[in-house]
Length: 143
Image (cartoon, rainbow, N blue to C red; front, side):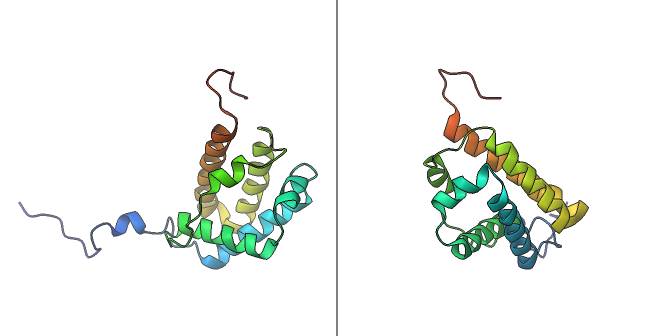
């Protein structure tokens, strides 16, 4: 019996983009439009305004983040949990508002095939942040 052959180098499948339709331009459009909505949201805007001094730099960092997740570019090297854990005024229900804006924007920018790939990852990230920020074993989990 022969081993299956592949022209891809070992481990390259782990670094393959999530979908060939995802581009850096798509990511930038998604991130820019999404944070435009966040900046207009009456509950989320004050939280971000208190923390973000340079929106261009913030957008660049988030594009690197999403590029690393979706294109496997490896450009993002930050630690987002400690940054988010120290945010003042964030409540568990803010995550659903944030996700609502993200879902709407992803569907508009990315289309029916690619949007779910971004949305699923955003939902996992939001759940992870929410757990990291609010879960305490001695208290009931906020629904």
